[in-house]
Image (cartoon, rainbow, N blue to C red; front, top):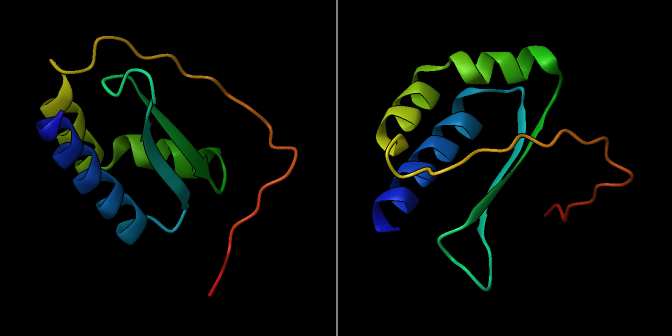
Length: 87
């Protein structure tokens, strides 16, 4: 998990810093099984999502975690409401 944590933190940091179309990226382990991680992502639009998938930092992340990730399931959703504290 330490190696995965380092890889996802690097990837999220780069995406937020370098990609204006990436609005939110969260990686959250399940409470009952911390080896199962849910990644919550919000993009400005489909082009921003596609650009993210093609970015060098995302490709680097995928290569690093290739043998760590046992399964992926993409669940697309339309938000009902989103909120965030701003300071």
